Image 1: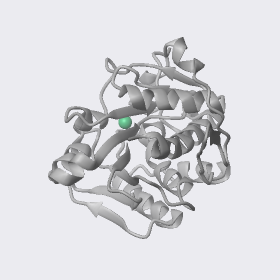
Image 2: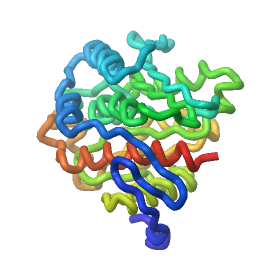
Image 3: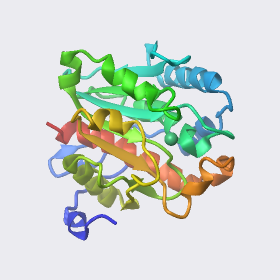
Length: 271
Ligand SMILES: [Zn+2]
C-alpha cells in the first residue's frame, strides 16, 4: 500500500474536463467498447501483434508510425510520436511480444492500450512531446527497450523527462511498483487516482521479475511502472493461462482512464 499521507492531497479532476486548482486537464476518452475491441485483437504471433499495433496507432490518428530496427531482434520497436510545444519528452512504453498462449495480460493489455492513450491526448496542443513505444522482445531480455535507449542521441536523452511503463494491467485494480518509481511521478499518480476515486495500490514486483523500465532507470531517467500483479495472481502469467478470462474489464478500463488523465496531468505539472 502507498503511504496514507499522500492520499490527503486532493485535487478536483473529472473525466472529460478535469479541474485541478487553476489548471485544467483535457483528455478525450476512448470508449470502453473500443478499448475492449483492441484488447481482443491479440495474436499468438509476435509479427502479427506488431502489425496490429501499427495499424491501431494509424487508426488512432498517428500520422507517422515507425518501426525502429533493434539489434538482435527480428521485429523492431513500434513508435508513434505526438509532438508538443517543446522537445521535453514523456515516453509511454509497453512491450508487445509474448511468452505463451495469447499473452493477453502480459502484455497485449499494455501494448493495445498505447494507441488509445495517444488518442486521449489529441484535440489540444500539449506542452510535452509524447512518444509511445511498443517494445519488441522484452521477454527475451529487454532487447527493445535497451535498443531504444542506446539509439538516443545526447539531446534526445536529456529531453527525456519520464518513462511510464505499462506491463500486465487489467487483472486487478491499478498497481504501481512503488520502490522503483520516481517520487514525483508517483505522487502525481496518487493525486490523480485519488481525485478520480480510482483504486491504486503499491505492489513491488522486483522479486517476481523485471520489465522495460530498468533500461531507463539504470540511466537515471525517471520511471514509473503500472501493472496489476499481486502475490496471488502472478503465477498464471507465464503458465499458458494468460487468456482474455484473466482480465477484469472494469479494472482494465479503470486503468486506462487513470492513465489517460495522468498523462494529461503530467503534461501540465512536470518540469
Ligand atoms: Zn511483460
